[in-house]
Length: 99
Figure 1 (cartoon, helix red, strand yellow):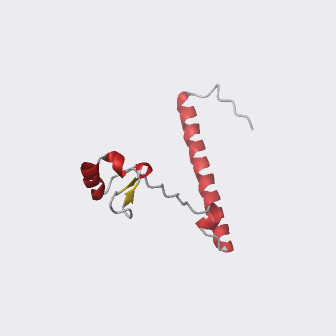
Figure 2 (cartoon, one colour; figure 1 turned 90 degrees about the vertical axis):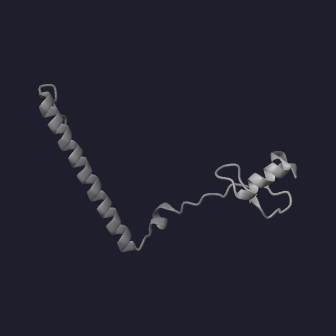
Figure 3 (cartoon, rainbow, N blue to C red; figure 1 turned 60 degrees about the vertical axis):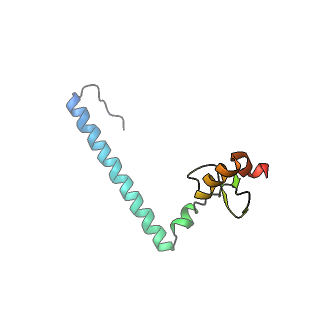
């Protein structure tokens, strides 16, 4: 169905746009409700439908020179031991690649 918008006023076009937006949102809501109902009937979980989001843990970049059980990555906030070790040994000494 093709509509002719060329003879419509700006107010009519804006009203038609709002009606279309509302109709699209209603259709989406109906589709979501139908899908939720079907998934529930089949006993499907979100994990069944979309899988699980698992992030691979980043490999450590730094390790305490004296206590190798203390490690941390390059991103994010560093633990207290990191600042102490860098001050005492220097940053190169706490890099795993240099140990």
